[in-house]
Length: 374
Ligand SMILES: *Cc1c(COP(=O)(O)O)cnc(C)c1O
Image (cartoon, rainbow, N blue to C red; front, side, top):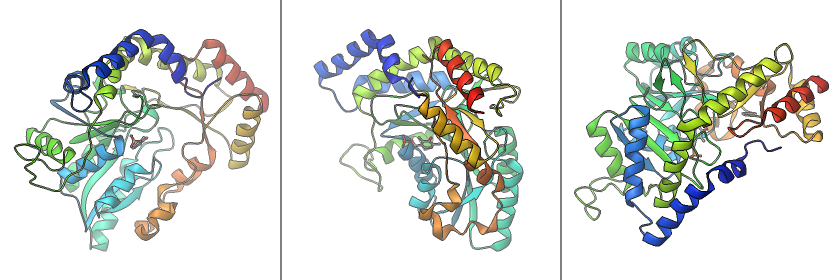
């Protein structure tokens, strides 16, 4: 059994993916080919945003958003404590100070009350200006953007949606990648919409910001490539990746999203009363980047993971360490904010095999094995 079966997906989509890749090889339009523009239009239309700017990876997507807003030294960027490193790394890379905020125990996403406390603390301490909240759609579930937006509006914060794992998710019919003032996603192979290498995209409704993002992605270009009006990056999505992504976006729309949701439902039904299963609030729809359960204690989690491995069932711990305890953020002090929920989650979470091609019998095997080891 595979944790995320990219081979099964390739076999299902092989004729279309092969044709798309071969066309790029034949055209030799490897950078900024027509497929890139086409994909940007398809992505913008799908998530319901005016602009999509593709780039080299999801980390750059976050970084470009912060650069476009001019975030830098003396700025506080609020980031959930329970997420992948890049959500906070990019703020630090800009020279800003990441401030780590605790998450909600049920949804794993940033907790609006903890966010408000963190902003108040930073204001009371002085020295930093609260500028941005990075709200992560962890494991495929959109963050509670109504609650986040209320706090953001109260304190004049910009909202950056980190939808690296959230692509395809929804709140009341509205798609992930449309909730931030800027939203960023990743096409890393194992994400809900993944390519065959690295890739990313940024979304916005703001014409000026979109133009800025396009400039930043290509060495701060002005009217043309050899007119450079700001310091930028070299961050483009390869044509071959765009071609693959168009095929995979179709597959995501035409059944993959439904398939992961059916798989999640099946897991939740079979694991009822066995472990704590993921909570999807009313009106929310997940794209199930991960199906993550919670065990009672670190000892139990580590034992269960080891025993499942012996039974041939791969699992992962996302994430073993809170952001505020990462050595790279040693200087960030974190303003004595309490992140007790994140600390508990890091010790008790376990992600089970999850992907659109997971078979019913595999789900039953995993559930049965979990019951046995517990
Ligand atoms: C994967 C991921 C990123 C970074 O994306 P890359 O394409 O790997 O650079 C950022 N944030 C979160 C939450 C992620 O899961």
